[in-house]
Structures are given as structure tokens and as C-alpha cells.
Image (cartoon, rainbow, N blue to C red; front, side, top):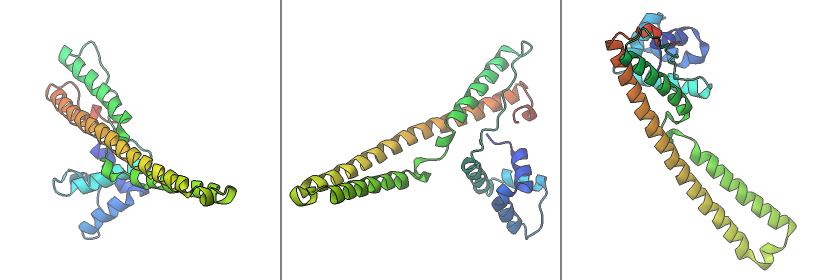
Length: 200
């Protein structure tokens, strides 16, 4: 749910998005591009996915929302179908913002890094505590190695549970995103609002 006009203007003028602009310029032979030319590239069926994925990633890393839909005003003058479509689009926009961190698949996340780091830290803490402050290593070493094994088992279980949860929420995000696109297309076809009314 990205406003391509806003994205094009940001890519052209905001240094945060310079990696995208530099790549576009490189593909255009090094010449400067206008906002309209950038917008056309963002709509290109072949090249746009790479540009938009990078745009979304930069926004996500900068804690900027990629859900750029604004709250649609619902009035009594709207037909019943338009009111319902606007209500559903507004509700879906809120749901998408709440699930936005699940917009990318679990495979693109850093769960393995931070869960693995936590497991290594716990093993290191167990080793240091019992190695420095007790004589358990000499009297009952199997307890220490058993604790290491429990940490590793816990880390694997936690990792797989986290990945499964992320994938479930990612599928929900993708479904709501597709449904919202469909609702917007339907509402535009019924002239419930103009495309310009849709984005901030």
C-alpha cells in the first residue's frame, strides 16, 4: 500500500533513499531523473519489484510505515456499498499497520542470529558461573553438559516456534494486503473516492 507518487518524490529528493536513486540513475546512463520518470520505473512490471522491495526495507529499518493509506472519511452522502467499502479499507489499513513487521517472510528475518546469540550467551554464562564459583565441573560434569544440552534444545524449539508464528502472521498480512487491493479497486470502480484521496 505504497503511494508511488510520494515514493518517487522521496527517492528523488530524500538522501535516505539514495541507494535506489543511484541504481535508477545507473540504469538510465548516469543522467538525473525526474520524479515522473522515477514513478514510471516504480510501475515498470520488470524492474519495479526490486526498487519497491528496497524502498520497503529502508522504511522498515527506519521505522517508517509502508502502509501509506489515509483514513477515508465516511459520509451519509455515500452509498451503502461505498460506506461499507470505506469502512473495510480503513479497518484493513489498521490491521496491516499492526502486522507490518510481518510483511516480509520469516526467512528474511534475523531470528536465527538473535536466538543463536542468546543460546551462546546462556552457555557462556553457565560455563563461567560453574567454572569460576563452584567445583561442579570436577564433581558432576554431566550436570554442566546436561545444562548445555537443555539450552540448545530450548533454543531450537524457541527458534522453530518463532518462525512458525512469524509465517502464520506473514500469511495473514499477505491475505489482508491482497483483500485491501481488491477493495480499493472495487471502490475506485464505483467512484467512492478518487485515487488521490487514498494516500497521505
